[in-house]
Amino acid sequence: MISPASNAGSAASAIEEFLAMMAAERGAAANTLAAYRRDLEGAEELVGPLAVAERSDLQALGADWSSLAPSTVARKASALRQFYAFLQDEGLRDDDPSDALPRPATRRPLPKILSHTDIAALFALAEDEASDETPLAVRTLALLEMLYGSGLRATELVSLPLAAVPRDAPFLTVTGKGGQARMVPVSRRAKAALARWVAVRTDDSPHLFPSRTGHITRVRLFQLIKGLAGRAGLDPAKISPHVLRHAFATHLLEGGADLRVLQTLLGHADIATTQIYTHVDASRLVALVNERHPLAKASTS
Image 1 (cartoon, rainbow, N blue to C red):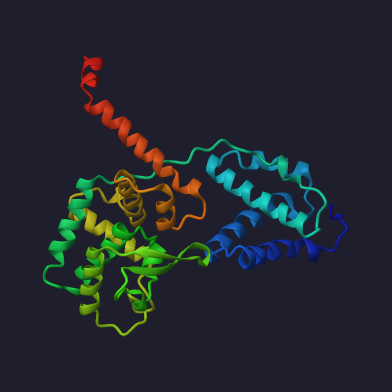
Image 2: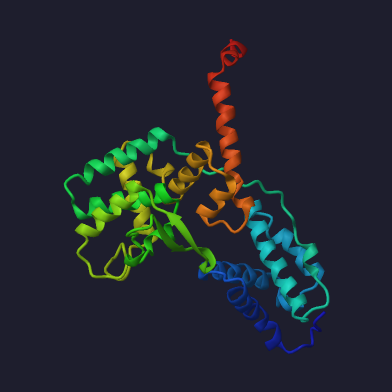
């Protein structure tokens, strides 16, 4: 492994070299890189320069992280494992001490679910408010249609360029996580809502959903969706752009969509990420049997 006597500059630059590799070779997005930096630098504050850390140093991190949620510990440990794999690949270490890191048992939480009734209430209000073609109301309707009708991530939606609006083909090209582009279908409803928005939009910005400084932010999108939910009589705490993306996926799966197709539509790099929706659908079916099957009432009487 690297000798502790190695110059400090080499150890200090290891994290920067790792992050540069993640950006160049794996296309990691800025937010992803920032998260890796926080986790690695946070560990370095506890054990000293990571490039020269011993196995016993990493083992001690388990105690330092004992108050954290298992999912947080798993994320931090994953960042360190990737970092040490990089050091080995680059010949900067001949050992990998990361096997001493804790491996907490984590269970990925199921996403929040919106019922078809909830969705209908949101759309009924959005369409009613947009009936007089008020620009802000038409914009909210277009945003809602794209979240539920195409399953876009919040960042993907707010950053869409005006040129992305489909003209002939019912698709638009979206740049997702890691700079990966994918084709996303646009329903007839969503296409009509976008056309209404473009017709009342007065800004000459290149962004489809402009603001004073560029495009509307994710925070503003969250506010708009939660405000709409509250006015529709739904609990705003249970609704967000991401929940609408989950509803898009869950309701497609309920309708018979193939999991691989769903993976493509959602822009998931790994099918394992998409498989969470099979659990969601299974949970729904179990609940349905427990609530509606004739024997369910008999078993509780």
